[in-house]
Amino acid sequence: MEIIGESFLQPENIHLFRQNVDALELMNQKLKLYERLNFREKFLERFLYLFMQTLNDHSLDLLQESLFTIIFHMAQVDFQQFYESFMPKYISNLSRLNDQQRLELMTNFKIDQQQHHHLHHQMIQIDLPTFSSKLNQLLCNFCL
Image 1: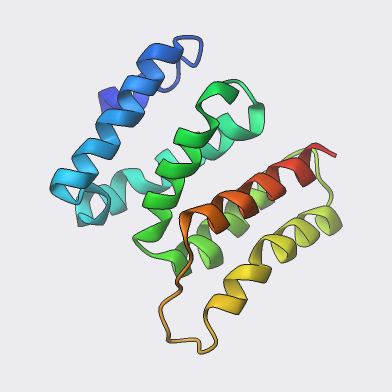
Image 2 (image 1 turned 90 degrees about the vertical axis):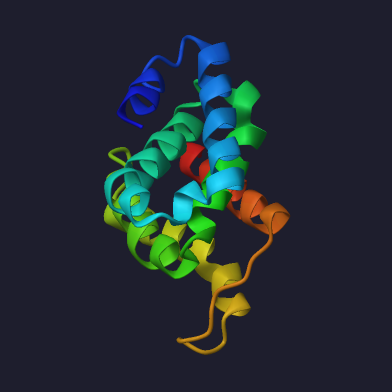
């Protein structure tokens, strides 16, 4: 996993990046990689951050759909943790924003998520198209 992770730090090689995204997705399909405790504890947040940053930098826009999909599959392991822990942490580290802008981004990103779980203990359900749309909206709002 470390070697795959390091290969993502070379975004100029789009073919290697795409190949490794596909490899991660294949391992997840066959082995439920993203659900494994070792992956969740050591790699999940690092990969999520890397893929979000890649989308945010627009360095590999040709892979946008693949990145939305892999982020969705990783977030799907625990949507509540993704929305309540990872995203606030990620948004708080966006340096070009002030606190009000960060709060606005997080609030706008959470709207659909709150509609999908009415009870705090109920599992969050969201589909890939909705998730991708909200993530794209968040990225567009950040660019403004």
